[in-house]
Image 1 (tube, rainbow, N blue to C red):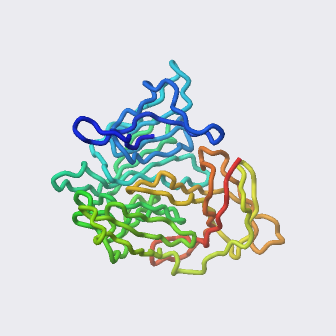
Image 2: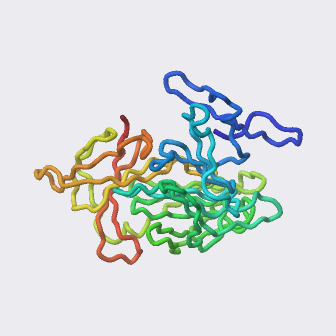
Image 3: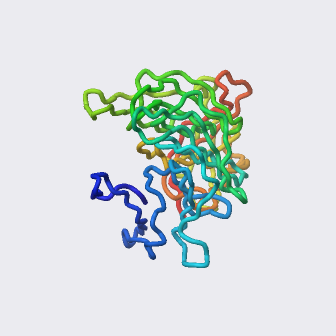
Length: 360
């Protein structure tokens, strides 16, 4: 979906490809049926889209931003009067979020909320257009999804990166206030979905603006790198790497996963053994992002109970029920233990993750 065609319009600008295609591992690529009805109804790229896990739209695809009207796309639409390929969801927002961030917030165990957070961004770069520090939230699992305003960031940011951490908080790092590179923001911040507030974090040593990336590592740290500069002059590119270590790594012993399966099957139980008693388990999909857009990012909380008493700290874990909740592929399996007191404000200590494959 989306992207540019290999062609230009009369004004010399690239043409957005609005024709959706379907990939079947057995047959390859094909265009959607009824292309006039399936054509993408907006011109925007990097649309912050996700498979919806719960609610009336479960299994369909949500397109959150930068456009002011969000949409749900139904690739399985079979013709009128059963709705349509595209459905506008939520009210029209006042803020256009070009180069902003969109995050499907962690899917917590026992909950059917499917909340998407959008933050930062601004008008398309021209003449020093500033970014915004505002943020909005929608719950696709509710009966009538609508956008609501949440507490803003400390800094206006375009071209930032937003990373889900194992303790369910969101690291917001890098970006800049104007256009693609001007007025870079060095100070990171953390958004806590439970509290709805942001906390300031240490500043980076290097600017991270257009074409920068940030990805969660299996040890709970975050890998931050890249950034180009105006004119695409290679001598000014950031070719270095910085590693951010969250506070949860300094305030207690990390639990260790002693035994685990390499493969997890939808709807089935599996067993793990852990070095210490735990309070949570998370599956977090491996990172894959570009242009501040991480559509693969997903954290799924799993329910569990005490397991075989012969282990050190054994647990029986319930896998995700279906691919709407967690699309098939490779995930990091984290276990978390509680902290009684925290200087960093992060109340859970994650293990080093094990890589597992989720499938049917």
